[in-house]
Length: 111
Figure (tube, rainbow, N blue to C red):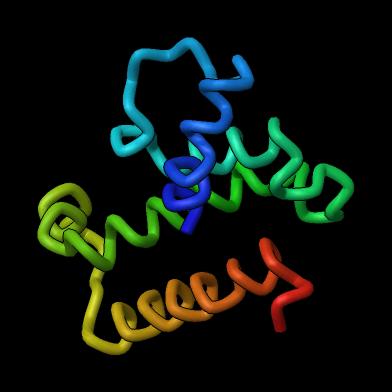
């Protein structure tokens, strides 16, 4: 959704001269870059009480997503930590709940 917003408004922002000078296409931006772009342009209200911690929360969710999507990496890098199906199910549940909440925060009037 964050990427879709950026891509939808890219042509208009280029015409207005408000598009960033970065040569990196939005499709290559990391999640945190997309969130910061939305914050910088007021698409995520900076006065939202969660805004100051949003960057940290995004990084934590990205790490959690990486664990769920690539469990082999975690098993290889942290063999002393035991993970079973219930642990991964819990992590996946957190991700699902988070992704369900994002549209509610970004588009509160569309409930």
